[in-house]
View 1 (cartoon, helix red, strand yellow):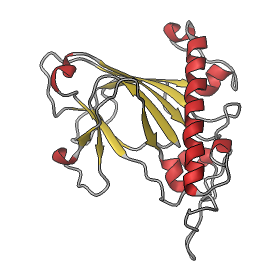
View 2 (cartoon, one colour):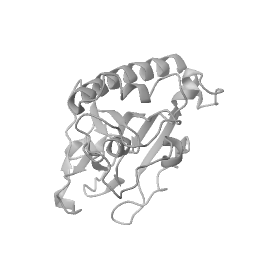
View 3 (tube, one colour):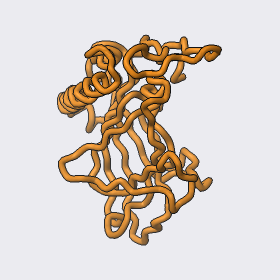
View 4 (cartoon, helix red, strand yellow):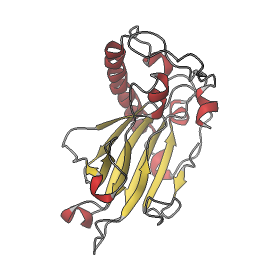
Length: 232
């Protein structure tokens, strides 16, 4: 589980330097009352009701996405949603991210290094650019990374590693990172909010069966651990 607050300079980026991103994670179970409440920063404690509404709305949006994936994968309706119910313990979180503004921007500066998300689905809400993805067939070089331009009124949807495992690699998570925002956007701070859905801790990481999901090949071991054990 990630600590609630991470100051910048704690993670090494792709170029060997330290990151420039501050993070604050809010545990879903804390806000929903699935676990005893934890003391958050005062600004968050004063807005627990708003955070709860954000969680419930985000979860509803992802339920729609998972329903569509059930259909596309040929799974029984409700299969994926049943693995991440709001009322059961998980490591789902709301993450607040801050990249500081730069008066003299260095546009090749990596704010947060390349990574995939370990959960099932991530919703990212941001206005300022800087997010990049690396296409699956490209070498990890600066010129191969592509910017994902924020669209007003839209959230970015990202597949996580859990869905990769469940579908035998049929669904893929994208390697992504954050660079200094292009152009004049670098002159303002980059604030974003992410809802990182994780399945219930007790769910199995065993590959899903049915539809177009490829079966485990003969001689290949299927995953037997729970989500909590697998994610570490």
